[in-house]
Image 1 (cartoon, rainbow, N blue to C red):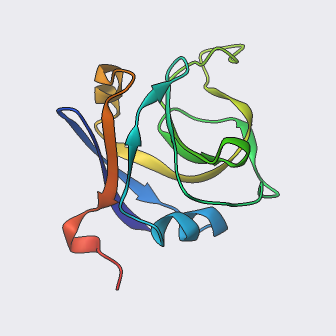
Image 2: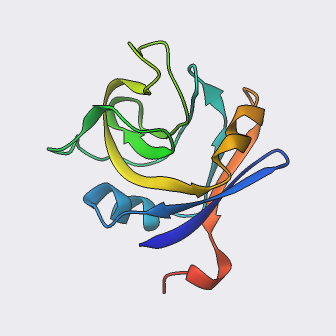
Length: 129
């Protein structure tokens, strides 16, 4: 598993990428940046990646899940209920490819405002060569 850092405004947190088809695609295009959008307690932003919906794509995910939404080509960070949720569990708009999870600082995601600049990069000691 590879470690990454997600920064937005004054907020910074750590996450890990899973060894999945989408995780490998994401690791190949880091660093990433964009403007934060919010859908309930989900942060998402479009990225330049085309990936098919994986066989094990999920609609309901755990808090702290990092996922890629193929129809919108978006990097998604789930940290609580979304407008699609039937409970407190995050629910994506449509199935997403799960490729990672937040490992530290998830509570800071509530500080993110729409339109803020967000970056995703390798943690220095974990850079893949």
